[in-house]
Image (cartoon, rainbow, N blue to C red; front, side, top):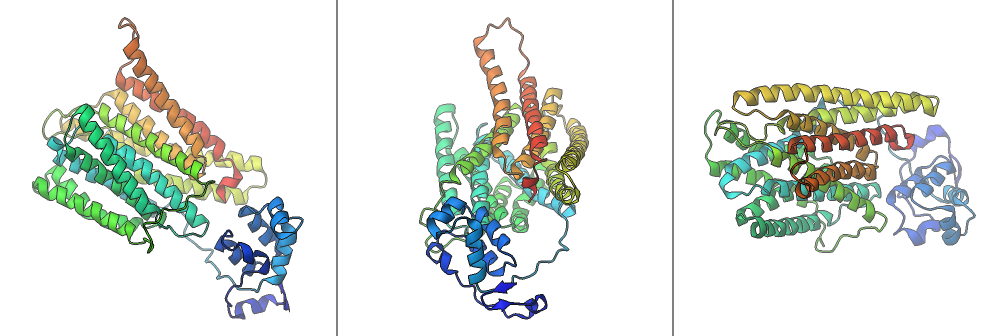
Length: 481
């Protein structure tokens, strides 16, 4: 590598003592705008082209370079930085990292599925205190703010910034908005204030859990969920004993409070300052927020359509359990698809060869998830039937279509194409909304499908559009970096 001091042999690079990175003079006036990652690349680069690629990645185009730094293009600035920056050896990374898409991802999915069990137990325990719209409201608000916090956190990580006060302000806004909507629901549709408190607590948990996911702390979420999950499981099944209602609610409250405290432990000193949201990130953040609203709305509609319990000991939400229990397989197949697509990208000689192989990987992942979903649906429905619940066939099909749509939406959003995900969700919701409107305004002599059938058609429309979007997105080589 050539530096200002001359040529350094490759064998001597490992023996060089690391020095404190110095900001090159060309960038000294713009350190507030340049991500720290770029400075690391400049001081550790072995070729000017590495610096040029990083400059363009950070948004320093030829026009910006010419206007601010006086060079004709990024290559001229890269050459100057390469010659003026002192070398600092970057630590080598272990190339033998574990391939994603293994048994560990099943555990991640279990962590994501456990909150649903916990809040199901809480909702059953507080049945006389909650209105029918309480849990749907919690899902919609929690999912929306959780998506917003996740995108904001990952975006700040990518630019080398800290999480800042995003999580505390997101929690405050989520709590206030969810509480206000809950109180408005009490006034308009009837209910008690306890429903608003339940929805706010669930929303706060989902928002805080999203912050922990950003920092890859799923294990910590799992630890926090242990009291609430065990208490809810015992309370629902009455095994090995009947748990008092107050104990089940208290255990769920411990899990919620512990998760919120764990998320807030990274707060900066001046946490009351409003977080700075870049204008370029705001439209995408709002798209992810809308994506969360659509996800919560679909699941909320699915839960509202669930038939009522037939006997006191029967299972509530029997149609939703297969989708919840399959979250582990969903996470497993998603990460297997991403890892397999990267491997195919490295081994393909042409773009067309990669496109064919990537579509095969997508079809294989979707088929594996569908098989697991059908098996889980058969097992759960057999157990539910023994407990006195017979779920309508259209609703079962709707659950399968909705679960497949969620898997495909997760695939597309993991590639950053959230606008295509919104297209799929809005198409399905528009179809169901159109059916609901027609049933109100058209004469009763017309023949319309039932509510369950209409929702099944809406979920199928979303799944088809998301399947086409996933097929289009997975063949883009730039999405697998």
